[in-house]
Image (cartoon, rainbow, N blue to C red):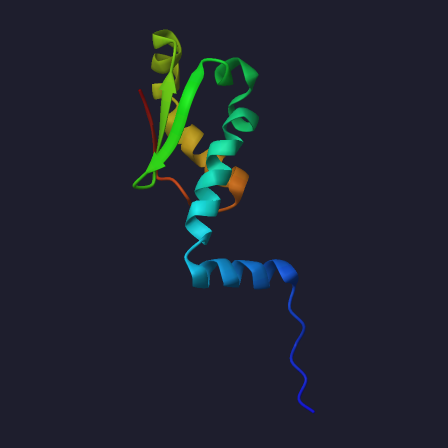
Length: 96
């Protein structure tokens, strides 16, 4: 009888998601859901819409002053969101 090495369930799930083309949409969904946790409630309450297109997170803001402040931090925001989901999902953040 041939024995296979045991594998962790998380590794098997990620392998399945990759093979079915579902890994990227799952990670993108995690990035969008991570916005309130990473940015905090103060910023989240001025956010009305988030979506990812071509590896760029687009964020619609209700406050022009907040938009200006976040524009200066877009690189740091990108890094924090990617670190939160432990994967390189987005390359930039744009504000509307």
